[in-house]
Image (cartoon, rainbow, N blue to C red; front, side, top):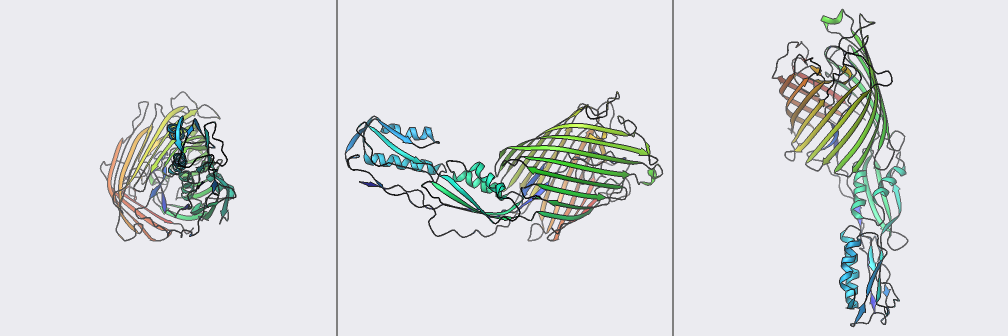
Length: 573
């Protein structure tokens, strides 16, 4: 008698490029209104937002040849399993399986300690194979070994669990093969599971260093073994550009120019380098950063340094020659614990060293706010963060929680005024992006900072400006605690959703201090309209006009003070 066992004969995974545009949620900005200290973003939610009409490249053709051949025929002796006759089976031993234990036991138990036919045994074998296939183990299956002695009532069924014999990686130019291989092997263990393998390839597809992934699974040298051939098209790693915007405080000159460079794959293993220099009439600021992955789950270690010097240029303060200098050195570690194409949860730990000093009459140290000594502030901060992300084709939800602990270490500012470098604060951020129609997006965001302490200006939250409440000048309100949020709708007016967008928005924020000190203005809100125009690839022009609901006493004559914000960004690379 002859029986046959065949694995699924064809399996091909082809992933097409998904166009995803990164957008950053508003950042926490901390400088006080009169004296500018280098902006910092200790709690920042950065997200990838699905475009209303993503461009999907054509799917690569499917091979016409079988990929996984059949197993050899099984020649079972007639004497072992009498045809058409029943025989007593005391126990069915299923060997070689490492998953689906309970399900397999449930399938075989009804056939034990009773008379069965060979056809029932073949049916059980097929049920076990189907169980594997239905659970994504499509290169695994069961068969009945030859030459069994069933006189003792024991029948054996052998399971061959599929596995990767090897991974062949093609198309790499700068990226190291180990970067790709480790991320596939993390999910494609034994037994090989189609769903987990697809997940690994999808994670590669949305990796910024990779533009496109094509993969093909072929038969290996032994039954159940497979070879995965992956063809990678790398994304351009180098980016550079310039921006011009009125996004700084008018105190130091609102119109800011900047030049930036970045590389997403600096040394070839997914490490990132970035640098930027920005300047206004009264401000010079530069920052550099570097991070690298240290495991296949995209855990990263990074370092960032920023340095700024500023002077007040407003006419009513110009004769006082007020200036400031600030530095930040930050070390950070981030480790995703859940990392799938649609969900992510990560923990982060950072160690920040920040200092600033203010001067009057150009070089005389002077304190403008409570806490600093001779205008000098230093904080040593440990930050613990939690990030959560959930996305699909129609929406993105992102949240971040961050606890900051200012400690008395490394010459941090400590005094008896109640305002120093010893503090605790919590920052909570949330963003929701929802597709309202195939072409229209809605973006909502909320940022909160709460603390029981009176903070140095380095750690305060600020409201006002293009990133928080439009229609007001940058850093209109600076305080210990604050809640700010906004909602905007992006409506394309041309056939291409990216070419010209109309953006109505509403922003609102409130802030307050601790220790009996109250901000001059606690709540600000605005309603307005923005436009975003991309005349050609690489050039983006943005303008916003906000109508303030609550008037301020210190409104000046700049474009910001009159509700206008603009930005021009050109990124040829």
